[in-house]
Image 1 (cartoon, rainbow, N blue to C red):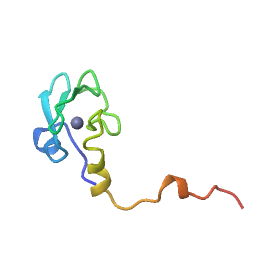
Image 2 (cartoon, rainbow, N blue to C red):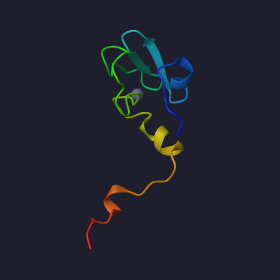
Image 3 (cartoon, rainbow, N blue to C red):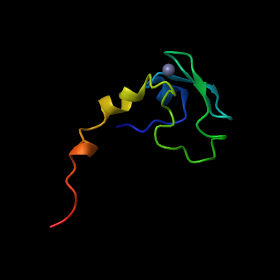
Length: 79
Ligand SMILES: [Zn+2]
């Protein structure tokens, strides 16, 4: 999947708007929820930092990501 970056263009692809780039304040374009995944842009962004807390856009990365095995179907290591 394309990496989501802290830019208007990149976040637009996942339905997120930047309210304040310097405080990393984001807003979900769908429900209007606002959140800040990190206190400042210098901090490493965690996985899924652009996900709306309500989950509106969580499917967006799954839809664009290549198929990967479900965690529940993994075989335990051994033998
Ligand atoms: Zn939302």
